[in-house]
Amino acid sequence: MMKYDKENISEKTVKAVRNIIDKPEFSLEDVKKANSAMEGICKWAIAMMKYYELLKIVNPMREKVAEMNAQLIIVRKDLAEKMARLRAVEEKMAILEATY
Image (cartoon, rainbow, N blue to C red):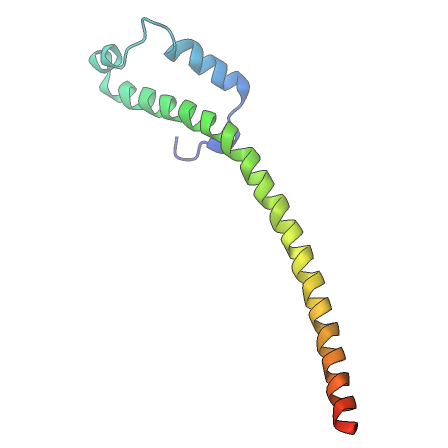
């Protein structure tokens, strides 16, 4: 369970787990009575289903952040080039002012 790829849970897996945990007769108390180790596994599976739902919200935001960071890199590079040109013009102006 520790090495489970929780970032890439398939729809097939979600449907299979939901078919079990969403049944009215499913109860963690009943699972606990039958097998306490299985209770932990069921809690983990329920947590993974909640995590899956959160990823559906968060992943588009992550993609947007990556896109915006890529744009920021381009803008910063452009700014650095323009700042370098400005410094060159200011240096030239300083030379001309000193000359006259």
